[in-house]
Image (cartoon, rainbow, N blue to C red; front, top):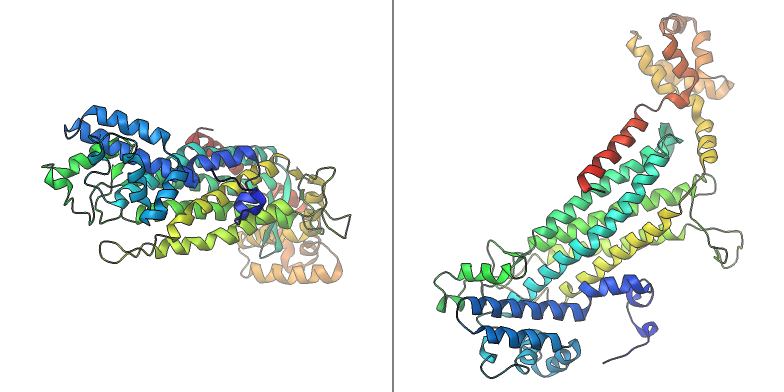
Length: 463
């Protein structure tokens, strides 16, 4: 077995971003080179099981192959590949070497390499989604829900184009990401369940299996049933690439959601904003030269990881193109898909750890809101004037905002001083006037919407 100091690894996923033992072992179970070979061997075993059920070989052959793949190591397959220069032929040779002369012919019987490769990838990515990706995302979703409900009444100035807008609550702002992440969880689940396999042979026309089965599609279904998969509706030497493309797209767009959330939280930690903060350990350093700094490193790291892995989606789109029944132009690029999944999971786990200790400065949120609270009433004022029949309410209020900025008077004071607007002011009821004097109440149904969003996704995701 090759042993290597992790700090001599080339990929930062191995020597930097997977240093947590529990995370690395979780990722490795599905996404390592060893795991890939293990899943490919399981496809070979499923093939032999289906052959035995059809009476092509004995069930003793199944036992032999099952024992052989239990003993199989990635190292021996790689050593064999040095001679064969072909990964699946190397796998087959290693299995055949461990079984009897009678069993050897049925290993890889009637199949081509990508019956094994594409089917194995579909199984491992499907299982990775069900057993690792989705539970991890649901853990993050649960934390975001808790924050949203906890902060549902916390007043926060809304921001559009980087400028103060009308108020929301911080819980409402977080509920946006509860909804977006929820939709991505569903997309990952559905696209993962749709991943397909194949047992159709070299060009997809069942040429070899048709020699032995009147209905080779039924045999294909029997093999794939052993693996919990269904067949692609059509295949060439490869499974239709759109199934995998859709699955990875769901992951990448999910990555975009957590990157957007992280970017929002990063900006809310700006010195002049200071509405949230990351937890800092007692020995943690923010800057090599400025001891007072406390940088938003976790949120920045997540955005940076997204920048690295998001463009890889373009490679998946390019891998949709395969000439005629198949070319080899995806043979190298497809090997890097596990890195994308690990990068995503690493960032989700980082966000889980960070959000568990999210610090919300409610006083600073209120202080920032107060900077613009008097101008915020411009929107309800203009809408109320329009509702009372003012012919150009927006322009009238726009001019009032300019005057307010010049004189320091509030909009509600100015409207009462303007003879042409006084009649409209008198028509306002007490509730409307109160809204103009207490802008913090102008939050629409932010609180109720937050509760509704969380309740909806709790039901849909059963968390």
